[in-house]
Length: 246
Length: 246
DNA sequence: ACAAAAGTGTTATCAGTACACCCATGC
DNA sequence: GCATGGGTGTACTGATAACACTTTTGT
Image 1: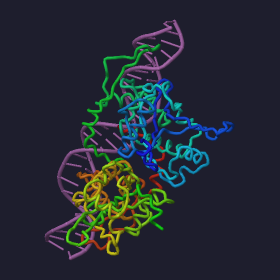
Image 2 (image 1 turned 60 degrees about the horizontal axis):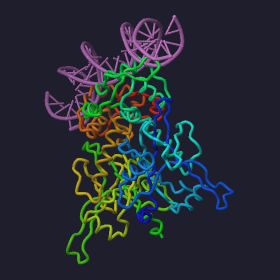
Image 3 (image 1 turned 90 degrees about the horizontal axis):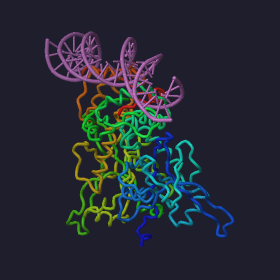
């Protein structure tokens, strides 16, 4: 039944970015792709890929992406962005990909609509996961199947550009965060050093960064002030902001 | 032969933006969609759509877009941007769309990868065009088939955002332009008023805006200084520019 | 000489950058 | 009391915003 509903040449692939606040590492969630020969003597395919699935007949592309994320992590309502379609005729043409495709029975010329999701790794419990999902730091990715390395790197580029212009950085952090955590995250994503004093001043002066009546707890050093991000206030301020910065 | 090569459920649609420097109007190039009943007594479909075509089997998505533009305008090497995939199950489901799809024989569940192109209207000669192509100002679009109004408006949104951050504005102008022409174009796209003195200073101070040894000719008033944009210089300057502006 | 569009300067305010030390807390 | 990371202030520079008149040219 479900098989009939699949569009065999159109899929959605999801780059799930998760920030690990304790190791200060921007990670990508990948699943294992593993296939042995019939006699189990030979390993035919053993690498990692993005999660993805075919688009179903009665489903929007956004729905497919949300479904894939939910199955992988149990999460809904995370920040989601459709960032590019990949459809080169040779994108699934290396040897291992062909073996895999044969075993799965889908179309050699499949076009994929790629999404990325932003969340923090603490939200995800990988223990209950059946796909052998695992976090990999963006800078030390394993061998990847299909054209998924390309997809991840393009998603990362888009994220880098976007985090300079839009307040999506907060999607990678818990609701309550410290200023230094935001700075660490920018530094991780962009691979740069930022002056702490200037960064603090800049952020604290924003009306949509709200100081809470709380400090960190359970920390073994001086606990830091916690803040939250108000999307409502941000949107109000930025309705008509036409600064040309080229 | 060609029919066999088409992927029946995947297309590319092209939003061709053309700036008309004399009327100061940002336009979109559309083609006529017209169908009569067999007895020619009734007009079944009479509206406009974007140009687009199915993706061919051995073609990348970018190639499809370039092919469509070339067939429509004769032009190659114009600024091209893949901006979004549209794949909602009901995107081709209104009555006229269904009549049209039946007559053309393609798939009811077609996903389209939408591109936009930037050029200036003077580059295009519509006389030789067989599709009854016509320019429409972005603010006075005709009745549009399929979900093409939605696609155009999303392309326009993307263009608005992008022209504030990247020097794509120059793709809509001739190679040699005046400062006031750039200002008029920004004002057309964004629907805002800009102070001429501040804008001039800002632009002229950019190293990648190069004053030529030429003035306008054939103009009935004081001829203005001509400038050009240097992408090389722009790229050199902006290699590593990590200004966080949220 | 007139109409039309090109071009010009100053001041005030705000944002960004560079830079080094003290403070609060938990252990 | 000490190690750790949190938190602070100032001066300089460059960009932006507000604002109105003169100049050049073709006709």
